[in-house]
Image (cartoon, rainbow, N blue to C red; front, side, top):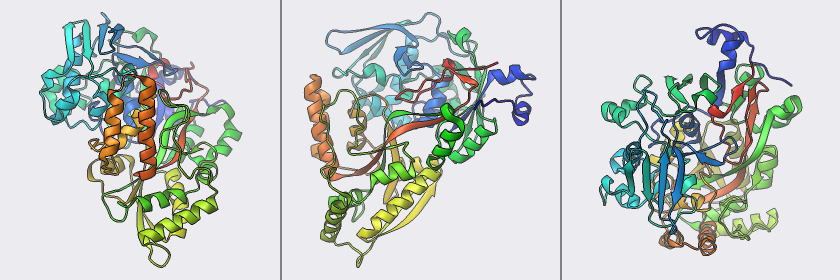
Length: 529
């Protein structure tokens, strides 16, 4: 069924721009999963923020509409024979929104800034392959020693600690996006405010109203502005996925970036191809706080994982839009072994798994006569609520008594990263690049930002370090598989499901291509006249 954005409320909201269909054709009303916690690309960590930053900034390389890595600010590049040096030739016509040219020194400044521990970047470690990055971020070296050099204004050289076959894909991540040095120096943390903001991407920041909308306008200084069709983007936050769907059905938004699982069958029946479900490189999981008793006992964590019926979650809670997980690293990922690790008990029946789990809990001192109180923390969403309720019921045979703690998305993830005040917490990880390291690095002991369970295992860390130093991809894959087997045995995080992306897309919105990264930069989209 066609979905047309010809709604009186929408016309009123865009009346200040122009009147009639021309205004509608120029404005993309985009449903978002919530408010960003930050618009500082060096402090970012969520998909919500990635979608916004991808519209406002351009890195050396970018994802195109199909999630292929293509030139961005860099027109082309060369890689040394040993894989340790990347030389990027920057476009002559790249500009900041204030008219300043984008030069190699801007990337030197930006990459030094994210590694500077004073910045407090939670995701700096994604760029640790750069020479001296880890030492700088750990406070053991000065930012100026980072392996990034401006050979001239249009030539940037990045030197690595060891060959990293997925390095270009790392640079598509929002942490690799540049900041405008003069603006950061002048305004400090306030450089993200609309009145101060300077960007180098297809759009500029016009308005940021927390809980209401974020408005971006087309950047006339963008080198490919002539190919950018949409004039204005309004990101509308929806913690409640059903609310976004209702707004879409009313013709008030062009797209929703997630859908309530319990409504999928109706939506597919009513709207057919407007419902876009595609494979997505990610894992939906529960983190277990390994610093708290009795969750520091692997037997308890393993038992809690074993009794969860993932097929039920996938089919009944997420109505077939998720896939039951048998590992933490999702299937189909690049640079991995053919026979990837799985739960040791993956082929056991549910009854046998329940019996084994009950025995493990009894060994740990818990059961129906000695109940274990557990609080599940999750961010606001009917899907997360329904999953938590189902899991609590499955845990009841172990003598677990479940309570819930619900926060909005930004508060929930801030708690996971900083406070770690939880028993068990819902989380999800979408791969930033197709390599198992991007999932297994989450629980390295020095990964303060994303090691939500505060897992500490020197043997695991040693395997990850060994894999990082290995240049043979097949040998490296075997080492990473060994690390995942150790992870699955210890269960600091309970893998539940593999993601699929679930979107609603209006017939008026053109250029949306389903892809495994679920990236849809507005610059590649258009709206029907």
